[in-house]
View 1 (cartoon, rainbow, N blue to C red):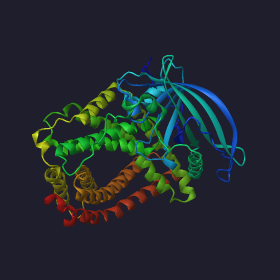
View 2 (cartoon, one colour):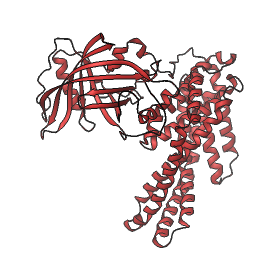
View 3 (cartoon, rainbow, N blue to C red):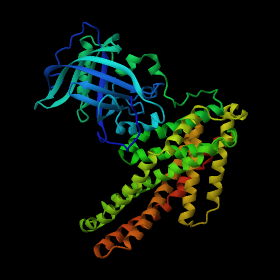
View 4 (cartoon, rainbow, N blue to C red):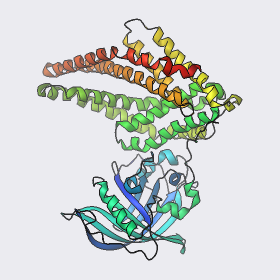
Length: 518
């Protein structure tokens, strides 16, 4: 099957249709119950029947389905094209034991996975080949669920599935799927599932058809997974956990960044790069010298292109909030600044998109996945984590203490910015340790409070600087509105200057930071 990676991502499905569904097993003699008025505002529509033919593709090691991702080409039931289903990745379950997944549809025949779908999957597939892994033939009986006005709000699908091996039927199973629309109250899903269970259907089971068809291999852990850590964990176990968490954060947010679903996806992907770089510093003593040299700088490059977009998103959020405090006259004139910022953000996102399509990025992901699977550890990594971690985390904390101690009474903005950077590194180190040292979690939370205040202060300073640079080209009422926004940012920065020392006092209390010293 042709799986060419040429071309940029085609977002045929936009942000994706949110699928909220529950699957239930059904025995051969099961009969759908009457679902009319299953809730007072829903009626059962007429039933329809379809024959569906679906080919699923994956890598030879079933990389996608192990992540919970399915990619299929299906014909029948009004469909003739490709669908990519992406899970939430955080394990969030829908109502009644179901799952919420985003569906992205792409036109194209079964001979080739469309370029847009490939781009959406790039972080997971990387340089692997995609090919058919399952062929399912389904006889589907669909019962529509309609509101009082006759509009569809959901449906119940009764599927008899045949798993084909060439012309031979290798297995058969039956399942009932209940699906509701994204804005429909979850009470409908709960009520339908309860009625089906009363009629003899099995318990909710989120297992996709593809997994049932492929068997145990499809249930293996994703290629990047964080190990469970107990009291006997070693420092090496903590390193593996931290590395896997950072790499996973990058991978699972990649599709959302490509779809440009919002500021949070870019933020989380950037956090993944920063945490990994922080972990390399924290655990350098137990890592082989030079092991990360090949991709440490590449992480910095990726963080940079993500940072351009993230900085624009933060500035936009701050200025939009400030604009809501203006009177109507000034707000109208302030929109010119927001339009300019939107242009800057669009250009930054274009550069980010190009980076995500580059071979350089794919090579980095391959290195990161390999590093998460097998970090190069030295003998000291076998030390008990509970005993060794305080000493490892003490260094970034000590640097933060020294940075604060060296501040004058009225520190310049740049000095506070450096404290924020030190706080972030100390926080990440404490969070890495918290998986086996519970007291570290409280300390990390307190440091996060300090980082938050200093981060807001830095954002206010940057916003004022940006406004001043843009206002130089404005005249009249536009310039007046910019001046009002400048004054608001300056006032916010001054307020935050008065708060950061309280946050530092909390983070440095002996009761909070004492775990570092035994």
